[in-house]
Image 1 (tube, rainbow, N blue to C red):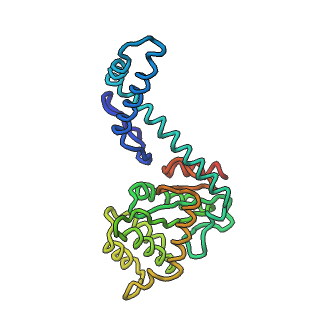
Image 2: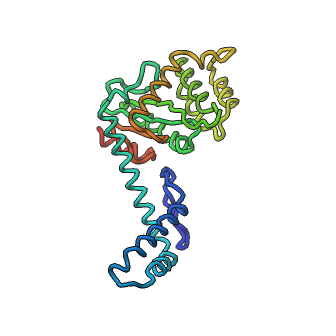
Image 3: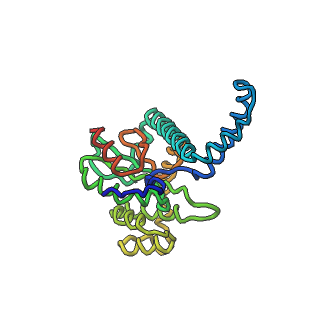
Length: 261
């Protein structure tokens, strides 16, 4: 279903797109344009208040700045995707699942999808239902879940705790229901993670010793090392057959899967 945008409303943004604050960026661009123009104009026109005219034009046509910001963001995203793809293809082993890592689908699948994610990442949560549907619709594809808890700050441990809990659930054959529940939890806390584990019959031990097991620690260490080698900088990031995806939209990932076939 396509929503109609009122004539005076701003264009709807792609919910899977991640751009900076357009107001701050536009202000910086405006300053740069005025400064550059003011410096160059006397050389080609012999003088005049070029800066004032540029400012007036931008105030009257602010959509120009929006177009510049979007073009800049598109180019930056393309550069990032190309760099990640080169790094991944230079060392294909970085995207191969480890022995204790969640991976579903045939080991010899023609197409493999890898997702790096954090359970507290809002874009990961947004993409999660569609990603699970992709699994259901493509049983011949291998899907690798890369637990990459990077959003903890200043002593926080929630992302790390959730990732470790999910890996324990995987060891007990209950990964997917726990993964889906963690993604569906709007405000993730340690207590919420414990509740989800309990509801799914996952045992972590009286002192949570399962969360500290060597296999769990090894998976997280390997993911962190691999992400660093590729220069990964954000969640979620998807790869289809070693190519980084420019979009987090599951529909776009689905089209990439079809193309890889």
